[in-house]
Amino acid sequence: MTSEASMVSAPSTDPVTAALDEVHARHVGARGGEIPTYIPTLSLVDPDQFGLALASMNGNLYRSGDAEAPFSIQSVSKPFVFALALSELGLDEVLHNVGAEPSGEAFNAISLEEGTGRPDNPMVNAGAIVTSSLVPGDPAEKFDRIRRCLSAFAGRALEMDEEAFASELETGDRNRALAYLMRGAGSLRSSAEAAVEVYFRQCSLVVTACDLAVMAATLAAGGTNPRTGERVVEPRVAEHVLTVMATCGMYDYAGEWLLRVGLPAKSGVSGCLAAASPAQFGIGAFSPRLDVRGNSVRGGAALQDLSERFELHFVHDTGLSAPVVFRSEDLSATDPFTPVTPGSREPVVHLRRLQGEIEFAAAETALDDLTIETGIREVGTWLLLDLSHVTRVNGVSAQLLDARLAGLRASGVTVFVTDALARHLLRSADAEFTSAEEAWAAVAGGQA
Ligand code: GLN
Image (cartoon, rainbow, N blue to C red; front, side, top):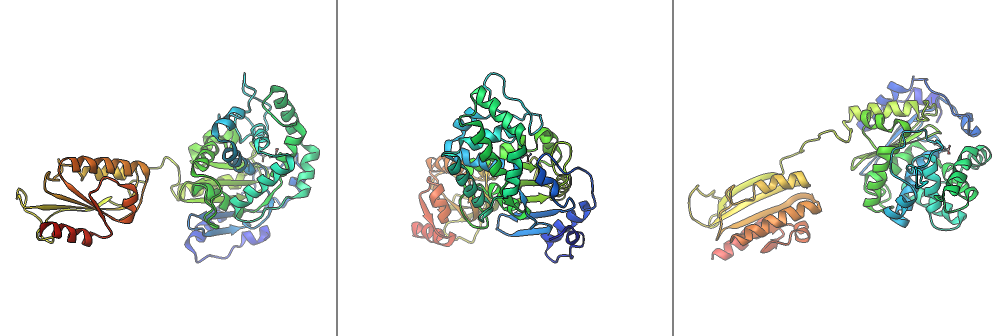
């Protein structure tokens, strides 16, 4: 697709694509920034190209403009190779060799940590050279693993741009200098030449804005590619990578980026950008002109715009989407459709029905409805905790609810829980049922 095509993108009927098109249209006219020349092939591209893509957690892919235009991934490879190194070696071993502090310096700065000789973080060139050298195997094996891993993130087999590789191999003396410096300081284990060659290869893998959207969405989805369903890395690894992207991904603009956009992101000198909104989506952007820090001008502006419009800033207060306790009633155990009159001593079934996703805040809210103080009568009553409308319970919430149920049982309350989900997560119940009706039948049986 040419940049001409991107100027006249047809109005879309799909609302998400329409929103992307709108953002695209607002920024497509911007002409600020420069094409980098230090890697000769990068200066040969059409500078007007501009593509945006968004991959959702459902695996849908939305695109606008030059979203299928190919380019070399450059530094956007860094977080994904970091993910591979973390998966292979674990966090402690990786951090032994490369730090996790924002450097506040340019991506290619010649600077290492005082004392240890470690590069500041895996997102600057020095750190990325060390990170890729940590991947197990000889240089050919290292690159093969890197290519396969990045392909799994993208959900398709990625190929190298041999010209981009040759171009950087010829002119990449600054990276070579960094590698030798780190070799001298003891922080680079393999030979300097071998390390930069693997690094240049990873930088020359060819992707599109769509690929970057899927790769970022895979991180946003906790390491599972939402289009192929493949688990590429463990959720913990995805969290670590997104964290370092948030603090270091935009180099000496990382702080202001987090302030203004509030999304973990990584930029590359080919004009590409990948950003992730955890548990929501991944975005890929491509527009070759760069600002003085080496970040895509239009890509950055589009991302800031999207973040504001979609309220994506990571500290944005989303509030609770729905009340977690949507039914809280005290019913007669002998006549299940009749609410008990306050103060009556007849046998009571306390029905508490929860809904939606139960994370810490929701669980803590639900606890309020599951106490003696808020009306659960002790001795000889039933608590029927109906979780059949709950979509997910995370570990901490299951523990909190479990502890409360154990307390209630100790006070003499018989606890019934419905739903298969609960069976795995909540252990402190007297019995589990597949439906509230079944539980009622058990209560009635107990009464008979
Ligand atoms: N290959 C490029 C370099 O090492 C990557 C830099 C970047 O994208 N910021 O200079």
